[in-house]
Length: 159
Image (cartoon, rainbow, N blue to C red; front, side):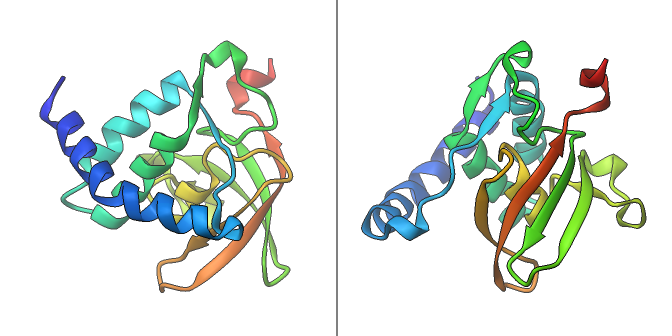
């Protein structure tokens, strides 16, 4: 185990008790169950741990999401679950709808609707399935809710 694993564990201990306490006190605050494939889990863990110093808020949120995710083999992934390189249609609580591709940071390009996993919305989307909703905090600090309307699996899965 490398130092990044210990750093991640330390951060999880710092937030775990308070976070679980507040969720158990108010069922409306419970986060939806999410599923992540083994390859996505491994690559996203590396990216988040490597980003802790540069982008601590998003990196820590991504690590929290990964900590609570059910990890499955790639072959067991359901087509309606948001994975890396999935095309996702979602609705925000203001009624607006968007369609994006969830990508790794190097492939991000908002003009092409390619949203990085290392953004608050990208972190909120990972592992959700069609019909699920999650409340997340955008970059301005505003709490928003999104609902996944449709998921198209990564292109390699379409064959």
